Image (cartoon, rainbow, N blue to C red):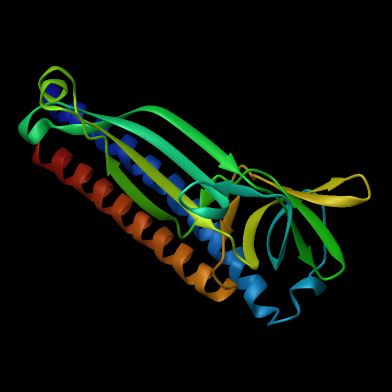
Length: 221
């Protein structure tokens, strides 16, 4: 078998495995969110709280330490990346050279429970803004173009979260789970479930297509 075919198969296999991993996580999130949604509005607090398991919860936000970002106001989450443009023509791309992450300290009020929230691994939907760093003509000739890319989640009265519920003293804390991470979204449980399931099935379909392409290459060779 030609070396180029072998390298292509390795690349396809790695990409398919990565997509499958993301698909499993999204589908798992979707399943947990559907379970929460089926509890019905106002009944989320009746779900059995079991520490050490991944689950989805929906509740009112209690801000313990606020996050106020200049230009964006009160936020729950904010990330700022400074990027530099490298390459020329079709090879030009943006590279992150510095990043800052800020998160408000929150608790989620679910029924009679107050659950502390850890730092999220995923936030949906994010708002974003890109600002080019303007400079003089001489700077333009001697330096690469740069921009500041801001993403943020504005303050919300309620959140839907997916993660690992853990015991903390006499209460609970929600942290990232190995399979689903820690998702924050102001969407309703049903809306969040639909979106995560769609992402999961789309990623799985793409992974299957890559596997099929790999099989075709083997047959052709």
